[in-house]
Image (cartoon, rainbow, N blue to C red; front, side):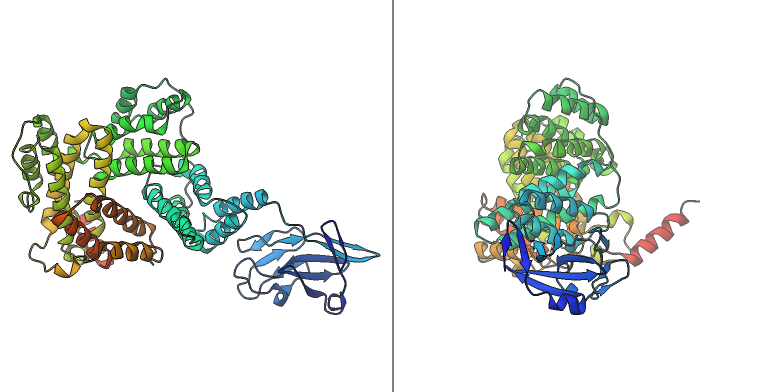
Length: 528
């Protein structure tokens, strides 16, 4: 075998002459050579789909090579994939009087990485989940950092979120942080799973949706102007002000106080506003400055379009109690004082302890964990619910993830505590109708906390949930509880662990065929 530069001479071409195809092996590579008339083509013998040998494939008259396992087709002349997704590696071939030569030079790593990122994006519209995984592996093998793949996905798709940030971006912070833990442990393959979860969830949320562009206008930034624009639901002005902030050199962290205020100006989006604000800040820290626009713009858009639940009758007492919060209520408060209270009574009880915000937080957090531990799953399973009673496990997780988020936000902006605590009270009150108080829950208590979390996060890598929104809640709640129990003790710690344990081991009913049919039929019958 002679080597000149990157070209390798193939000494024995008998099989190619006799059968018009042969497999050449060199330095771990399997290269399929195919002769068609006077032309010779060289491609990777392993199909890029699942690795089956293309040497067993079928060749058409127009030089289309078919992998007979799954009917993927590759144009040998153009190099295009005709049926399937992943691109097949082609090698330059040179025929001369001195024999047949093949160029085995590796593609530059930077080109491989860029192609993998492009291919990940190309996999979105058909939600080619396995292909996303393969392209991530190719990106990583070419020296790419996992967080760079996450950043690329957010940058390419943040304008496809019509109503702003969703669970994909919010859960990304927890998945990416866990992936970095795994990398530090040398578990690179497992770390890939966390990034695949992030990117596939972004793909799920953006599937077949067009760009919903943000205004390019720039306005001089003023915190209260941004807050006011969000309040009156003026997206163009809010985004222009956000652009102005970035142009003036402000950081994501500089904007956090006003975003936190906007998130808690209302009992908004069933707690998602505060949760998304907190998680966007975490993700900004993990990904750096390049991610700021891709996080700020969808977050601002979400804060504008989120439903304002303190304007509906069930939560209307919220604003009245907020007006009465003067920080003088000195009555001690415990979780037992809050269990089973309605929204209005929860709000009133919390105001009585307004001088004790830390105690109020601890009592509410334990009460919300107790509620979750005692969720009556018959409401999730029933087919005859009223629409207002379409309650499920995910609704109960929000109380604890909201508590985690507002604790961090209020540590940064302490004057938001009254709003945060009263909104926690709203969660407590709206839970009360869906609780089985006398349920036997002793088996859900956790004896070994460290072992429990090791098993929990290991299991998250193989969660088996087809809907990303479910796995997002599994991750967000597990992360929130792990964070909060480090600060907790006694019953509050034990109840949070038990509530999480029960949630993780309970089936979640996501498709309600009969209930949906009955509710639709009855709703239409009342339309008149």
